[in-house]
Image (cartoon, rainbow, N blue to C red; front, top):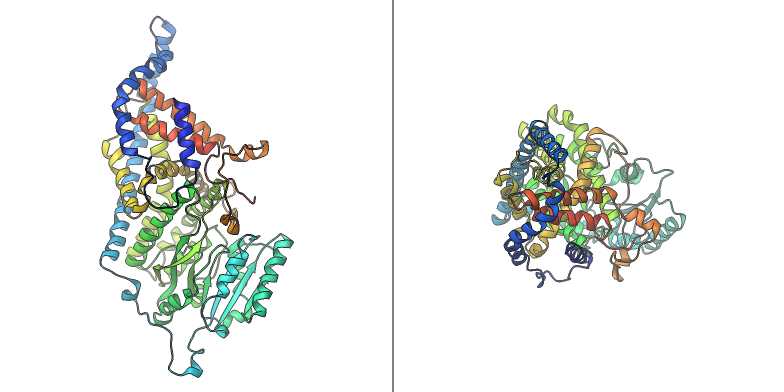
Length: 575
């Protein structure tokens, strides 16, 4: 029975998600859960006999003594520690829920009240009545495209940047190529020359080394003499393809509002329907843009720069100290420093830029580690700098330190794994400790609901989103701790794998027979080991417990097993 359940879950997690946004007909999750609960008593009685047999101490004196020692140890040593852990996790959960409620209220209020960027800030097309001066009326814009061995996407990104609607003599396309593969480097240079021959002002720039990674490349790009004539800089990662009118829509906000330093556009995903993992990512990122970025822009005129699909005022970058490579989130670093100088940021959600989601689990883990570890490490480095800043109000300092950094970048990754994957399963082994229903049910339900209402087309995969995010919380908590303590390779930069044009072909799901070397890369023994612990807790609960925690714990254990064996995402990889 368990093997069949696991196979079903494997199939659901690994098969490509349907291209339409309609609910999957055969996933009647609520009815399935109802049936499971109705069968729970009979399941418990049958399984209890099997599971409880090793713990049966009748007729065995040594077994009775062991049980007595365990009960005393559990009550005097384990229970107090677990109670403290429950209290701490409940406090962090309340922080997380209150932050989610606040952000959702602000973003939803802005939507209902139609507080569009055009209504909050001055915006009008850049135009002039004098035809001879029409070109001079436009500011000179630098477009930076940092790339590193981007064989699959370099043509698309360079082509999209060169197709931007802007006077040809008022735009410079700067390709910052840090590629180490000579063949790819040659291809990128040839592509730049081809666009130069078509009359586009393309500057192909390379460095002697990769010091500072992306931040180092952007900083070096700003040092070229021709940049001095530029007023604004648009930044696009190698897999981003802006629409031709991107600058026409964004630059006026900067031209007519001198306090705005950054205009951030929303990401749109070309491959979100390739598999269930990419659809789950879309849920999380849509929430990030629709709720986190929108609420930050509306309430504090501040949010973290996403590193791409945005336009900066160059004078604001220079005033903030330029690009720094002290963390792996150079974009967030620059945003915080510019905000402390009094600059404002604007998120424009109706401007979308096409991009690519990681479709292999390894690439996604690398990306999430970089983002989580870098943000936690930046908090460590900038907390005191924020406290002593003189140009911002006390309320903005509280927002930066408490909401932006502590709750979202430290509490969120730590409490998700520690509470829902460690503390709750452990309480079934220690009956002296109980968790109030509002902590184990109402809070996570509220947070999930707030996420779901901003993603109505993805309601049918929300249960999978919950299980997947709980597994990912193991990686995020580890990354956050590494960043806070600056242990291991806290400043390691791993470029996210991109598939580009291969997405147009048929991607294989990870059910292919793995080779020995690929098996070592795919299998996560830490996840499988943790799955064993969850299975033990669920089995103990079904045998001795008085609640239904085992339903959730079994499902979570199966999710750890499936992902631990690498049955998630696609099998196409360039690494």
